[in-house]
Amino acid sequence: MDNQHEPHALLWDEYKYRHDHIWKKLFQITIAVVLLGAVPYLKPDITRVLKSWILIAPLLGTVLSLITLFLMHFELTLFARIAAAHRQHQEALGLIRHGRHHYFRYLVMTYVGFLFLVSVANVAVVRLLWLGLVA
Image (cartoon, rainbow, N blue to C red; front, side):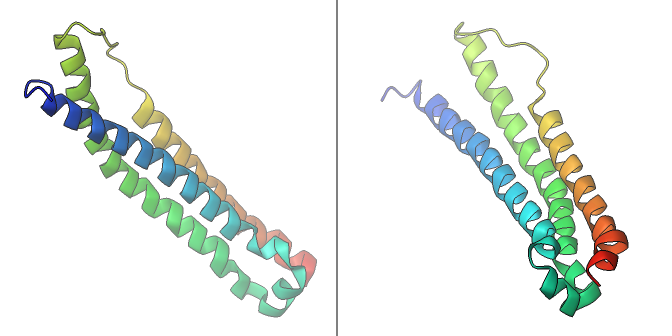
């Protein structure tokens, strides 16, 4: 491989890895938060036995989504630096001219924030409504 293109190949590999890593983590976190949030509804008999202890599962999902907000911030910051270097290299070679507005970070953080809010709302629903219905 030509030495001039080798750094860009490494940059491209890092770009792909970070991008795929972010998407993979988003899917994994979504599945985990949804499953933890659904635990109280899956077996009402267990909810009757555990009573308010059943809140541990959806609360864990809420904490997980909150931690994800912070971790995604750092991951997206690193990805933004890599993406900027990758775009700059493409533009320097005249391959493509990129726009100046990049929404990936905003959309990912909005999604994880929404996941957190829905998880908090689910904890409230389980605590205030569901536990009363299955008791």
